[in-house]
Image (cartoon, rainbow, N blue to C red; front, side, top):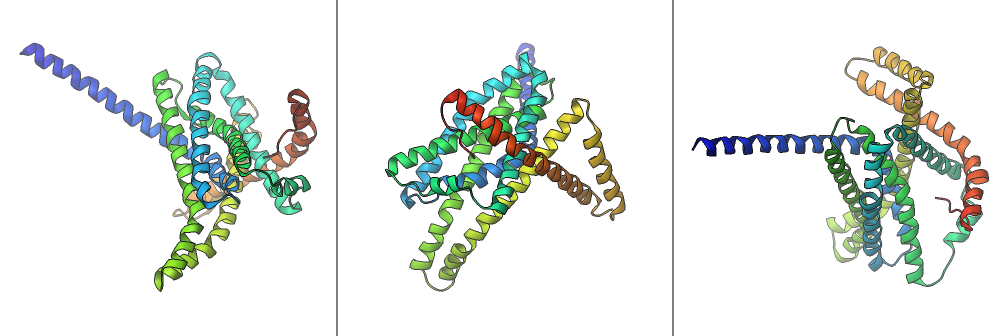
Length: 324
């Protein structure tokens, strides 16, 4: 009897450890998801453009194909690479984060530049291309998955950076797996709702009367503005998160002045504000100057990308490097 009680006690102890580990994984997954907000919002903002112009019956299948490619990117390719980095090259995580943050800054700044100067001629020509629908759909899906790979790499690297180094390898793997699945489901679930919202609105407007008809018309009118707003929020989030990542990386690499300066401004604004809003004011000041830094860095990177990096990629691969 005493042996059975001891066994049950051991089992209870193991269950407590397992429960604590599950709580740790859930907590770290949530923290990682919040830290990766900029890349996540950009992912949700960018993907609908790959469905634009497709037949209504093909919109959800296209989103599903992209989501499946996104899961493959995160779980099959990026998760093992991230774990290998933690074992063999933990020193590389900060530089890789900074590289990804710089990419976010570049993407955000390029969106701002295009909004000011208008789309490039080659972009307009690409949008006007016709051709076989099946081939066009396949090309769109491949392009979306390539874009997703870059954003997924940033998400997974950010997630990895939030996990305490002392955590075991299997905890890190579970956190990264949870982040990969949850973020992919959230992003592409939201994308599916976004791309079908106007169809649902049209259906209500045509098949219903009274209040539901007005709701349908309202949805149809609301969605274009919502998409523009989502693009603006995604761009701002990219610049904010990308700038913050680069500044924090510079701080860790021994160049603390920019990071400390913004922190000093944020603390000053927080202390000057009423106590009830001091935290929000401090965060807003930090985010604003992180975003300004990200925009300036991104603007500097635009000519580097177009006149140095893209020609190098073209020279190595024999293909023209695609703009995002």
